[in-house]
Amino acid sequence: MDLTAPRFPPAVPVSLPKESFVADPLVPPAHAGVVLEERGAAARAEMVAGLEAAGHLQAGPVRDAFLAVRREVLMPQAYVRRSAPEESPPCWDLLDLFRPADREELLERLHSGNSVAIQHDGEPILGRVPGPRRGGVMTAMSSTMSLTAHLLQHLDLRPGQRVLDVGTGAGVTASVACFVCGDEGVVTLDIDPHVTAAARERLSALGYRPAAVTGDGTTGWAGAGPYDRIFVSFAVRHVPQALVEQLAPRGRALMTLGTSSPSWPGLAVVERRPDGTVEAQLRAVEFGHRAGAGFDRLFLSASFRSTITTADGWTQRSRLAPPPDMARGLWLALDHLYPGLVRDFGAEDLTIGAPECRSWMRVQPVGHRRWDVTASGPRDIWAEIQDVAGRWRTAGEPDVFRLHFDGDRIQRATSPNGTLTWHLSPGETGDAR
Image (cartoon, rainbow, N blue to C red; front, side):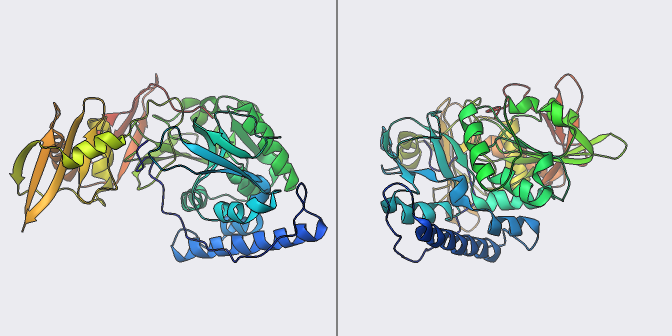
């Protein structure tokens, strides 16, 4: 898998002090439990301080929830990868809080700011035997904390709100919603019954009892709606109409909207006005949630990345500068107008490939306002970029686009001046968690 995909915010480094735990091979005794709780509180405080220092988290209810919710209760087991990134089949280790030898590494993992893998190949989560796994893929996880913090703050949770959490994962979002809003109005929904069962048990251990249900996330859970807040924690191709219909007046829904490429996500913000009409935006963002299993996900394999870096192609000298990374609205438009492109963010210079047809392009500076553009394959990626760049500039260089719902599942994104537009795919919407 391409190491640059999906794109997540950088982890907040956390270095935990080395301390010894009282070692019981199965269940920590009471005094060891106290030490464990104190260690968890210290780790959470350090994680929150790191998020604040990096500008990802501000004072408010989400920060308070991050400090209060015991992540080791939500994730008493988690996977770490023991093999090299490109090694196949991959090797994993399931760490367990109740194994003394695992505790230090597990606590560090849970509070590192990185995403945390909690399920391998759709397995039951409760009652697992810790230890090594070989091959397969991770099928459920907790997202990076910087991304979670940013989105939950934008969601604007308030006491008494009814919240639909789509894509339960480890239950982090559900626990924050319960902490802020109260658990009576919270529904957490996942397509995997094993994920639902584990979240129900572990949220209960924290003292929260939301409705933890199993079903297709893209159809929502109408029985407990309408909702004041809807949060989708996997990428969709277009906004599910059922979720729009379950949004209450003055309600807000957030979800990552993208294509099969992981490189340039958008954030869909859907709000229902007091009069019942709907207003929606698509915002170009740097990071987004992982695409679900329903996507035919594109990635740059190690061999393809090596080809792009080392192979000869046809080279042209250009005085047109490659667009900057901060021109996120341009890259978002490129992803939709010329789909199938994946960027190698690990490369020193702008490097993009089209895995399906094996086209590629790399751009290298060769002097003052001069660049060598080397390319290969049937697609002229450089021309595609410059085409979108021109149209984006004519549109006023927007990073926010209006989303229009035209009925019959037809959705459009349009620049504020109306000169740049594209239709969203009505196909698969992702994992349906």
